[in-house]
Amino acid sequence: MHIILDLTLPFFAVIGLGALAVHVGLLQNSAAKTINVFVFNFAMPALVISGLAKQDIQALIDWGFLSGWMLAGLGLFILGGLFNRFFFHGRLNEMALTGQAAALGNTGFLGFPLMASAFGDEGLLIASAGIMIDMMIIIPLSIAILEASGGGNYRTIIKRITKGALLNPFIFAILIGFFLAATGVGLPGPSERFVVFLAGAAGPAALFALGISLARLKISGDIPSIITISLFKLILHPLIVFICLTLFNVKAEFIAMGVVLAALPVAGNVFVIAQQYDAMINRISSAILVSTIAAILTTACALSWAGL
Image 1: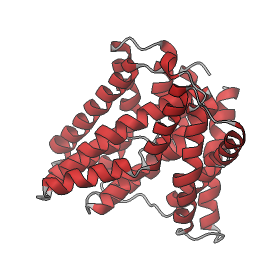
Image 2: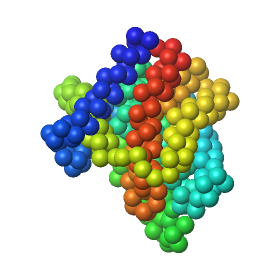
Image 3: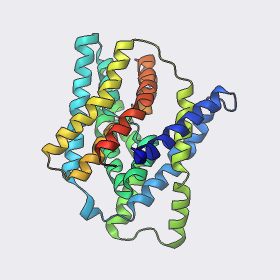
Image 4: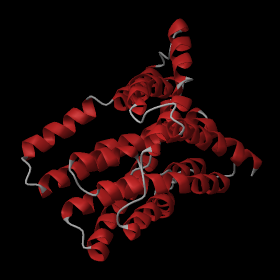
């Protein structure tokens, strides 16, 4: 338990500092946008590249993990959407957002630094595999349904999905990291020191910015729906990931990492998409806030179960 507290409390304490800075007037909510530019485009990609570049990809890549994570994400996406439909009488766009919120964790801003701290470079590899599946399959599927629910043009759908994938810094960083590892090039000399130095800022800056963003959120809207989304993400997602990875005979340490990754709170980009399509804005933002607070417990439990 001491190790778990050492791992989780600093992360959530930095999130709390970001929120506190807003509440006492040291920062405006808009400060998160500026910090996010640095984190999203520079520091976090550097963290991913530095972690992947030194890996033996051939020895570590696990197609069973990729398949299991994808099956779990798609299953939860469908289950969340159907639950919203039958119990909350949601429309198609609300079904898509509920499914997305249930299946997507905050890997970018919370998952990468937490997985690196808990599991080292292997943790970064698993987080990278998970976010690749999420960005290439779950998010495009959700956007396609949202566009279709509004009568969108399918050319527009394909263009938006392709652009979003190709221009995403995380995708670029993962591809570069895998290339450097697969070719054995790595990061020579000064470039490694530069990337590692930049990567050191990723975790604290990302968590502080997350705290600033959460400071402006309030719990409002349909409380049963908010609780349902949070429970799906924090409880059901890790359970389904465990079942799916076990079905694909993934080795035990990767299953443990997958469960910890799945225990993360609802991803912030779900709120961005909800705003863009003007649907479930209050419910999604509230679910992000509730699940992030509750994730202090769920990540600790997942790490404990993983044997840390």
